[in-house]
Image 1: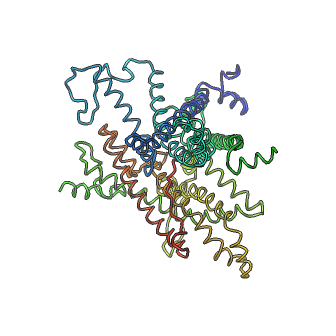
Image 2: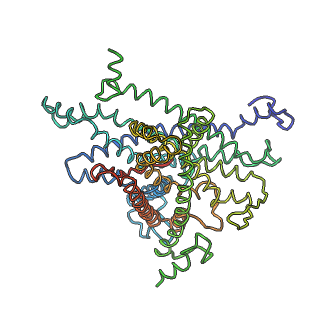
Image 3: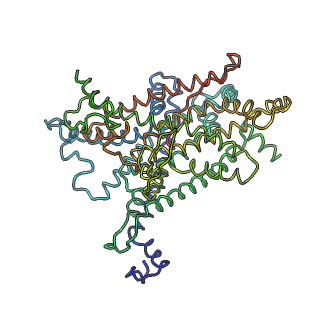
Length: 293
Length: 279
């Protein structure tokens, strides 16, 4: 990075650190923070969409559809989600490979499950055996995002279902009295009003989602935890930057990162709550109305 | 018949009793159920002890957080913020690294007349190190729950206590604390469920499974890797956890009934179970 970095062993402490913290491996470490943000940016809307679909399905008048919605939201209760994470990622991987296997090699006669092995024909390997490294990484990341979305979608579904029921009945009846159809009542009255009831639950889930991001490491993604372990491990003098075991300090850094992230989220969510309370038939909304009047 | 054999070999495997080698080939369903069940011993151990110690500490923290004096309030607030604001996973990693850094000296102390030679390297073992982390973590979460409950103790109750001439410790013990518990209990039940689920993280964070003595998820993961078939071991773990959750709900429900026994039946609060997610 800097010119004086060619021979780190001769540098004083400050310069040594400025070189150490900007070397190639550390740039990768900083990039892995982007992985975390990317995960959150993709997962949050997807999970919300899943949750919305699940909550709407649970309200459906068609019995099997409502069962499906309720089953999905009930699924995650009572079981630690880490089990879901580890389970889903394997299931997804095998489901994709198996589907491609059935389509691509219809005349494959051997059994897919051979004792301890899961063997599909070479064409069905996902990603294909000769794919570039980044394809593998993207595939792994996509699987992880999907897994997160499924698990957190169920939590969102729970919250949104509760929020939909919390909207005052009178509001919906008024809409019906105006001659709105069921669909119109849902989209024009229920959905705009439910967010303020959903927000406390959703902000809770957001906090939990933030705190769930280190689990990416368990799913085999090179995330911040991976790099903190990697970089923090002690380096002998054979390396350019020898140092003892610094993993504690790296994890301390991650801890501070998460604390700051949580704090910022709290502040933003508090503002959002105030904003969404505008014109709502709740105590907070009434307070805002009084203050303005 | 074979199941009895599996039970004999692997029933207490997670404690290091029984067959040394884990099943490698021709893994039967019995072996999976027994070994994963044996791992559940650890989950229960972590959950029960962390919850028991955490309860006492959490009450102290919650009371500290309601105090006026900044010297008492601020440390409690910071403690709660740090442990609730950061992932448990990172806390495990940090604690492990910190415990490994501790100098390896032996300390002797006496508990109930029995001399115990404690060594600081015990901290780097899951049974103590992870327990400490879980204890601190659940204390912070429970303290926030109790704090909320302390603040919602009805004003009338406290005024009535004053009118009866109760003050200080007597007022806390007879009026404030029981009402706090009554108010906090449903949320605390969720926290307990939540904590038991969090115990699944122990052997996935840094604490190594010494001689393959792991918890339920550790063995489930072992089987999933061995057989490349996630459809058997993970549902087994799930069933075990659902059963454990039901037991917790039963026990906490009974306590809830006892806490509210003075109320007329229809005014009693029913326990609403909404298990949370990861921390």
